[in-house]
Length: 163
Image (cartoon, rainbow, N blue to C red; front, side, top):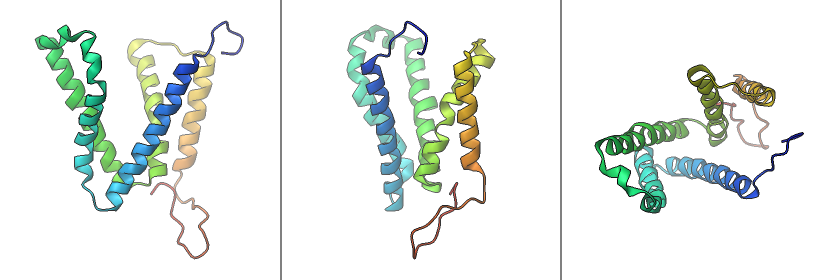
């Protein structure tokens, strides 16, 4: 950060860029499946199972927590309550909105997480975080204003922003 002794972790930045790119590919692929008549309600469980397979080797590090009632309940809640339900609702939204709109609206996630951290956990973001949140919120409001139209290619119909 400017004026601090901290350094950016290049590997962490690379992981962030890769995750953002993967999320964009996921949105575009889900939109494509829906456009070809695919069942988007089936896309959510398939995504969750695939993600589970990818992270399952990490269970070898500390598997003992899974064999408790509390651990099993936690895994069930994370798998069904947060991940599966979240992806089900997400894929339904992708089916009804443009991929660009879904990607933009997904930016509300870190903003909401920050707000919950402030309200529920008493966190106090620094001035740069507050400015970043205000800019993000302003950008989301700006792209959500109804009635704006994109410039269309000659001979095509313009698609309204937010659809």
